[in-house]
Structure formats: structure tokens, C-alpha cells
Length: 253
Image (cartoon, rainbow, N blue to C red; front, side, top):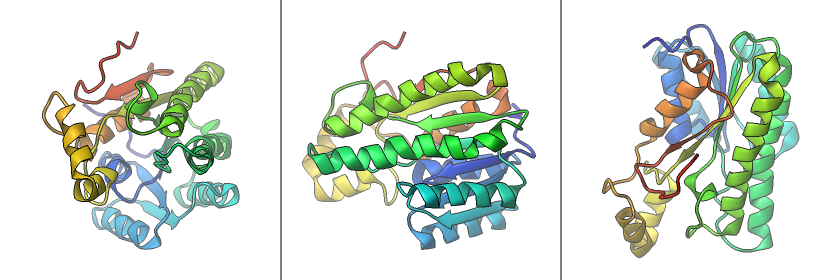
């Protein structure tokens, strides 16, 4: 199936590894130009080099997305480098799972406000696009109470609410907004690899909760993200796509 991405311009935060990197790679493989950001410059440089080596038009910058000015600068630089913006994918989390004020502040600044500021900064270009879409990565922790603690789940739920509000608000302008809620996702350098190495009991407990007997691979989540972001999903807006291998038991109506 042709996703209709050829010639479109896409921004991906947290695009240097895991789900974000796979989103960037799939977008590029489908013919989109891509700009990524992440906190670590060396990781961004390596990801951009790989995208370019594969023939993509790619741009990237090291950015702390909790810094409003830095995030806005990256969006503007990306629009200039790519010639506009059609797609934004927000894929950054502070992974603040403690139950203290620092966790609440980190989740607000990084998970929540990064999403809001990304959308606001990109809006002047999205309003000019014929295929504008916003896709924000939430989590199944926003649907169910789990080990992650109250701040993480609360902000992941808030992101879904925010995106659905955007969908309604922007529908008349032809700008779509959706979320994806992944379950446990394992990749090199990711949180679950760290937990496996340092908290093996928690890792074993979490793995046992997955009916499939395994955690997701980044590409399994990224395919859903890219589909929602693409013109192939042109009438889908205001939805939350759960990709969790039947991990969660709640019924989403």
C-alpha cells in the first residue's frame, strides 16, 4: 500500500533511537524528508548519517525538548532545511516514574509541554500543508494503573486528551491529530534493556504480563505511528491507537 508520503516533510522528536528512529527510517523509506532531534548530539549525528546513506533527505539537531526556545529553534530550522512541515511526531518522554515533585515537573516539562510547544511551533507550516498531521506517542500507562507511578501515567493520559482536543479544533483546517499508546517496547539503549540489566525481577514480572510472551519491537510501534501520520490514514483523526500485544485489559470504546 502506498502511504502517500513521497515528497512530504516530517519532524520526529526523540528520533535517534528506538521508536523515533524507526519512525524516521520508515518515513524516509516511503519518500519523506525527515528532521529529527534528541538530547545526545552523537546519537543524532549517527542517525542522520544513516538516513542520508540510505538516500534520504535528512536533518537533525541535539535538542533538550523541555527547553522552549531550543525546541522552537529546531522546528524553525527544520522547516527551512526541508522546505516546510507536513507531519509532526512527538516521541519524547522524561520517563519520570517516581512519586515526587521532581517527577511531576519532569513529566510536565518534557512529556506534556514538549508536545504542546512542538505543535504550536509547527502550526504556521501545518496550516499551509495539504497533508498536515500530528501524531503524539503516549503509553498504555495512560490507560491503566501500573508500576510507573502517578506522574508518568497522568501525563500520558493528558497527551491523549490534548490530541483529541486538537483533532476537533483543527478538523475544519484539514489538520489531523492522533496518538499511539505503545505497550512495553524493547530496544538497545531503551528503558527495558536497562531494567533487564539492573532490575531483573521487575523485568521478569513485566515480561510475564505480556500474553504474547514478549515485548514489542520498535518497528512494530513505528509502523502504526507512520500509518496514522500518513495520507493513507486521511480520515483518521482524534483516535488513540493502542499497540500492546493485548497487554492491557481495558476496553477502549
